[in-house]
Length: 275
Image 1 (cartoon, rainbow, N blue to C red):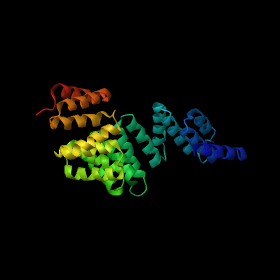
Image 2 (cartoon, helix red, strand yellow):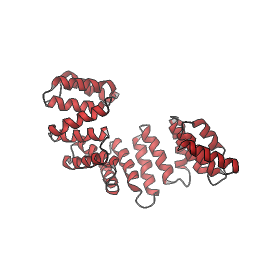
Image 3 (cartoon, rainbow, N blue to C red):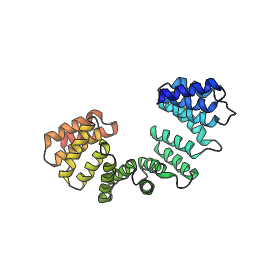
Image 4 (spheres, rainbow, N blue to C red):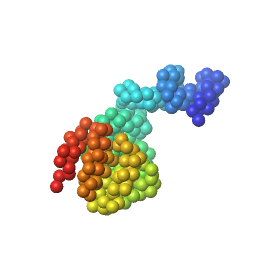
């Protein structure tokens, strides 16, 4: 639909060159078509004293973000979020960029402020983002109620279900409840390898290896480069006594693992799972 949107927006501007609404729509379509520089030039043509000036600034944030120019996007998003009259959406956009750049505590604060400005209860997604940021910031006691609220507001949203379920599995908290959350998430999104992996890990944590291994194998087949899934599969194989297969899985995990996970995986390759 992007080429058609671009065509129609350009036609509207030919008919009325002062129509900033069309210019805003054109810039969005260009940005989503990987024409970031042209989109930014289009947004620069929107009148600063017009009714779409703030929308143009928000459009610049989105365009810079899609183009991978995160420092510029973050600086502009911070300016919008700290300005007088900042909206819940301004704060959410700022929080999303903070989260993307690993500043989880600041992201949680931005999402919390967005909730304070949001109409009604803010919706499941904003609670989910708030809880996820708190979780990543190491504030589990605050993250738990935020994630639970997200699930209550969005009982059919697999992202919220999966994050809460997986977080509980990682901490060994209410594993039965975590399994139920992840089973529901997988019913809603059966082809998602991360959800499949998380459910397999939940079964593994409860010692249900007959259920865990097929799911972990499925997750690895769907996403062979997923370090987390390969590591979990290796753990399950080792527990079953399938030591050679376990080391193959851990070696696969080692290839794509993040720096902070390498020491743990190397220890498993050297010594297996600790008793």
